[in-house]
Image 1 (tube, one colour):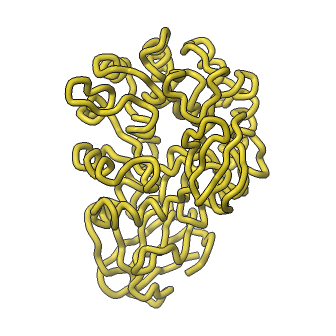
Image 2 (tube, rainbow, N blue to C red):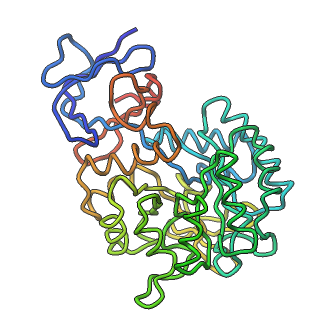
Length: 377
């Protein structure tokens, strides 16, 4: 069955044009300019953008991926899909190894169903001095052997691991991750500039939420931030919620890295889509007040209540991104990080019909996944 979306402002990384597109069997089959050749569903001049891709997400709608609870995980996926995220990776946090294995094994089933695009181990191989909302008592020195066991538990669906490269075994664990087919990320790290360079040389290609949980950028001690920003091999994650990082620093990172090396992430946790109150993030207790999530003990920021549509809007309004560039950092660049850019991430013939219809104010009016409406405009 064919569906034509007409009278649309189609946004791609190359630009914006008035036009139409057709969808058959979950795929985009035509993308045209001007008036559609046949009647279809008129979008009345609203924007159509590719579905958002979130590579760092801990949950939402009361569900927390680190628990491995499949029903709650489904609730979280459904919540984020309604906000335009059609592809997402489940991020775990530091826990005992058996708990991490159990959660990864459980979430692997949702990966096999196509609800999740993979599993991210954000811990336990991180620095105590930069652990943020991770339980310091459960941190471990990086271990290639342990990582391989976690990868095995994920049954082929482990996609990324965050490592503090300066720790004993850190560089070897990064090399092992790359050898296992994982994306190696540097984060929650106390690395200096030279240690960050060594991590990149070992194979690290992602900066886990740049700026957060790492030494600050200094004019005599540039630390990992300068190393991560200046290396063309590294993609930097940014939490664009107005809480994690000041907008001026987000603009600085974006100006240096550009849309091809910048990805917007949510770092969302269970409270996303609900409201203030008490929640959990792995084994840690979290309290959300005025939409900001912090540990009950210690007060560290504990993820966010952000959704990708809000991050997209803030990218345009607060960071000065053009619509094509905002599409790239919210969709195409993260798709490339996951190795899925041939399948998703932009509006092009042959790609999956993962689409978001946005109003003139960039509010979500409709979401499509593989040609099926999640919410119809």
